[in-house]
Length: 491
Image 1: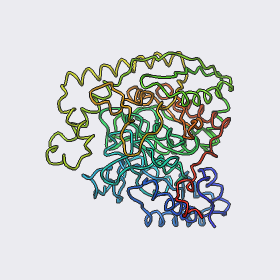
Image 2: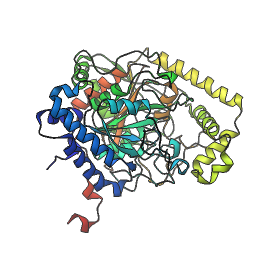
Image 3: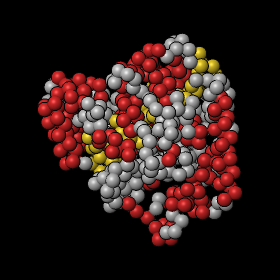
Image 4: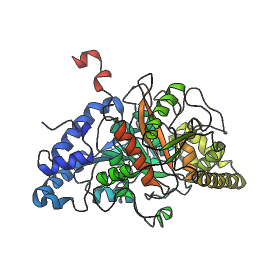
């Protein structure tokens, strides 16, 4: 019988594939079996690519049989199942964007990140659920309905990379791709107890281009090493995303060629960081239980000869600027056809679009000016600190059907994302940020710790996260399917 795939990271799978104790096709079959067990409860996938993935896994079997260790050359993800968020185009595989408008759209070309994953040998198992167009940091849409949090099925897994986080949390695939325009990788990573990495803006090309300069593409995984590996595979310039061109080279892998070993080596060398602990970046302040769990986690890093200093909020809350930029670009996306498609849009997104249509060019220019000042302030702050640390998100997961907590936070005109200042602030600055599991709240729900680095200091962020993972491992924190089944199903 194939082993339970929940416990297999990329390093483990490679070792098992190499010694012949497990075939990629066997592991894929176990992955799909696990998906089938959980999917009726989670609703994590919009499309499952079983036939194509099975053929690709069989091809990986043949490569390993024919070439042995040489099959890994330029294929660090050979035979490893991954999923792709349904905002990202996949050739020959339905890409709905969580929208009734694109329910039958099948692209003819992969986005660069997907093409690179496939070239590295990864097996794409399907497309994961998202709020429509990624407009909210939750999971509901009219195409399928909400994805649910595997730790509590009445609650949201966060979003908009909802299906990605929920499926990774229960062990479906080595990792998943997500996108993050205002916290959409890190919020669901925190709510579901997995690793979510938002690289520096542009490190992984975002195609189709996201011209508002807020959106990052990155991985959700169960280990920091796998986050580094997927980031490394997907990184690099592509002319379709000008923000990806001209960035510094290098990330997680050094001369050794083994990303996991190289990341461990980088973590071993990392000493003397100056870490600024920020209990809150604005309203709503993190709940006491959440803040305490995150604070205990950052103190683990203090035990690694790093200095942790508590600092007050270093920025004014930039939410009004974020809201203006997002609403403006949402309106631009439907500048010509809104009357024709309004009845098929999510009502909340439609409200954002209509608000954006009423904004002036001067208002948008003011928002960009605010972002420019924020970026300058952040750069100055990172001359004093190597990392910033804080709870990833201060509120607990709320009802799965909602797009925001019941206790609405009022900041801008609509405030639909105003409840997550620790997340959205660093989309405006473009800095690398990772959410890692910090522990469980008094209610038994995951809490995330966010580590933020200077622009292009992605490797430092990941190395520090790896130190935390080594000293306070979270791999035993898994939601149990049996806790959600009716009693008669578990007998």
